[in-house]
Image (tube, rainbow, N blue to C red; front, side):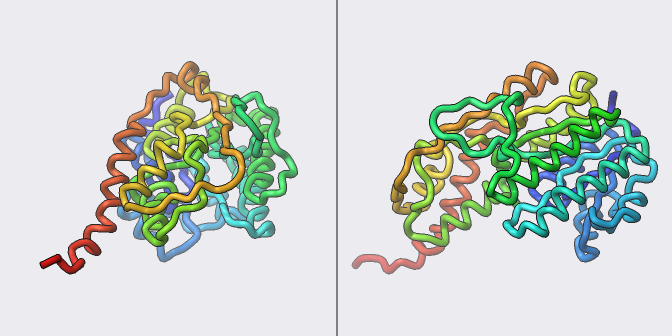
Amino acid sequence: MKLKDKVVLVTGVSGTTGDKIATKCLKEGAKVKGLIRDKEKIYLCNNLGIIPIIGNLTDREAIKEALKDVDIVIHAAAYLGGDRATAEQSNIHGVQNLVEGAISAGVERFVHISTVSVYGHLEGDVELDEARNLAYGHSEVYTSTKCESERILQDAMANGLKGVILRPGIICAEKNSHWGDKLVAKLAAVEKVDWIHPEDLTPWVHADNLAEMCVLAATHPAAVNQTYNAVDGNYTENEFTVRLAHAMKKTLIIPDGNPIRMTYNCNKIRNDLGYLPIKKFEETVVQLEEQAKSWIVPHEEHRPKNG
């Protein structure tokens, strides 16, 4: 299946990945709708060249309207905060509404962006593949509600919905990313970095690469009813955040406790769908290092010169 002339509904277009997904779908020849909650963010859709649909996932009528003539749904929206009631409304009830609406609308494919957090947190050197049991009932709100959203998808797929679940790790981008430019800003705001262990392993994926995975998930026949770890690689924090901290000459204080050593096997999406990264880890980190250095230049320029 190709995206050319298909109608794609993308949720979460104001987030780290949604705009990249929309842009990628447009390049593939699709007509794209963007579901947004806030009318003030219509400009985002206009800038992307997609059709804005104002609505909330808790509003069944808005979802029904958004799904008119839609062939493919790519669900990238999620609540990442710690308020359980809000998380359940968005990540569970909202997903249920969207899935039911998609079934009623007869969509051809439903791509759901989940997270590797659904595996929970395990001690020691553990490799996790897609067959690993999920951490249902986990104490962390985000983890537990994303597990439940996957349960909804699995039930729907068992009853005929052609769906795909992608489980990304940390989603990095040079702009509008908690693990990209916002991480750089966070590091810039402190003198001492004391919350990361250099040996922690980070399941990294670039937002542009995740958008590529979404297109493959939406079009490849082998993807139907499959789940994939959407990860480019498992990198140590010494290769990632520590480099950004060093670029800003920050003091690193190693926290107590054992480093996080979980790794996420990412062979399945490469073998099944032929996925290859567009954006490489090293080139992205180099760009973020340049961003990091730019934070200290203004301060150095204003230092008094000797003599």
